[in-house]
Amino acid sequence: MKILLALLVHFVADFILQSREMGQKKSSSIKWLSLHISIIFICFLPFGLEFALYNALIHAIIDGSIWNLYKYSVYKRDKTATKETWKYYEDHWFYTTIGLDQFLHAATIVLLMEVL
Image 1: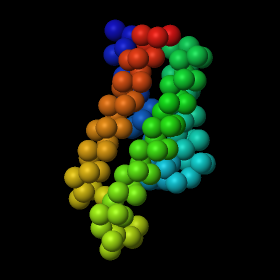
Image 2: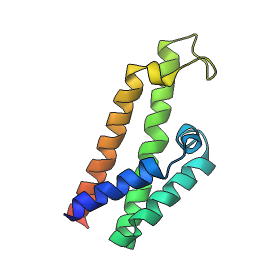
Image 3: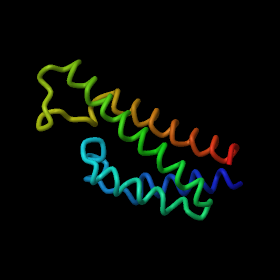
């Protein structure tokens, strides 16, 4: 039951409390990534300080790397893509990356629940 509650908290922190601007800029701006990770940390504090710290750190690593890798791959595949012309929501790999991102976050939560 505790794992389901943690996954629900993750949903709230990672989707409901994350603005569009935060989602777009967190992989290229330490300010926006820090704000997002602060929200993640605060939302998970009821699960314990150690859990909140580890989860926030791993969340930052996932968000800071997976989206940069995704953007890099898009620009490698489509030489004409620019920030202004590229429509991320039309790209199959955008949704694949979201799925991978969320799988990694959920796996982190489950594993931390088991270990801590």
